[in-house]
Amino acid sequence: MIEKLNHLEISYKSNLDLKKSSYFQTGGIINLAIYPDTIDKFLSLVAYLSAKKYKYSVFGWTSNCIFKKDTNLEIVIFSTKMRSLTFDNFVYAEAGVMLPKMCNILAKASISGFEELQGIPATLGGAIYMNAGCYGNEISRNLISVTILTKQGHIKEMKKNECNFGYRYSIFHEIDAIILSAKFKKNKGEKNALQKKILELHNHRHFILEYDYRNVGSVFVTHDIYSDLAKKNLVYRFILFFIRFFIHKIFRVKTNSFLNSVTFSFFGLNRYINIVSIKTMNVLINNNTDTRLLEEYINDVKSLTDNRVEIELI
Image 1: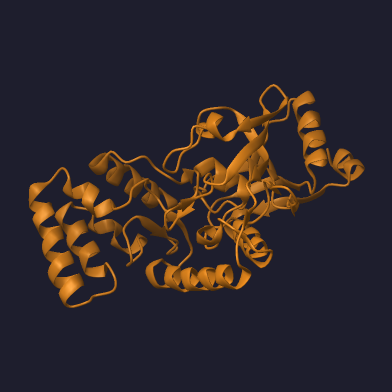
Image 2 (image 1 turned 180 degrees about the vertical axis):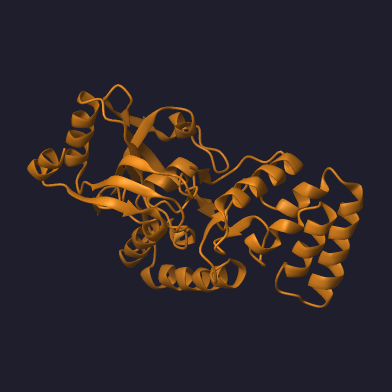
């Protein structure tokens, strides 16, 4: 295996510690982590692994993944070095391009339509898979097509309307395929205005989102986790209205720390109070907590709200 990687000129790391390398900083060991830097190398690698019947996984930056403490993986291919980005008649980007960098580069080139996505810490492939979005914009808005590698080893270009995009959803949740690259519309914008907007949204994100603790963003697919809890409980609905109107609006309390405390007490979730962000109970934080507790929290809240889980628990 190592001989083949050296022959293909693909970099790799042995015994990679997920506690240090994954975004949420939990998990066990990856025996062999592989980093192809071109799509051609990626395809050659996958063809070799498939021919040898090696089992492998493919990840981007793992910013939407929580690895359980006992998770150990044999072979993982990371797309993070596959980051070609060009913009001639359209914008072309490979799966490993980091979304924040892509948005900044396009803004500097006076290309609009991506400013709202600048603060999402994801590779392009992961963003397309989840149809990532923020401030009313989604990665699929200006998308033309996605190029994938099918389970059968074929390269296929899928048009936007074939991808079945929805709120934090795409067809790639259902089919066994690997996202390789994507094409987007090249919309003209004004450089200074685009960069100003990115800066304003960047500052706003730091005000409303969790940045003090390591986290993977929203856990559940919802606009408002508290309102989802209130749908099934009339008493809590009144409590939520009271806190949001009197505590948040009148007294201008800027965090959900008090709301979290009341909510967790009301639903018997007190043992989870220290593993969620004070800004929203929809964000789990890495507070040196056993990942089993995180998993139990996800299952309990999921049963209370019937929400689909947005993060990958591995």
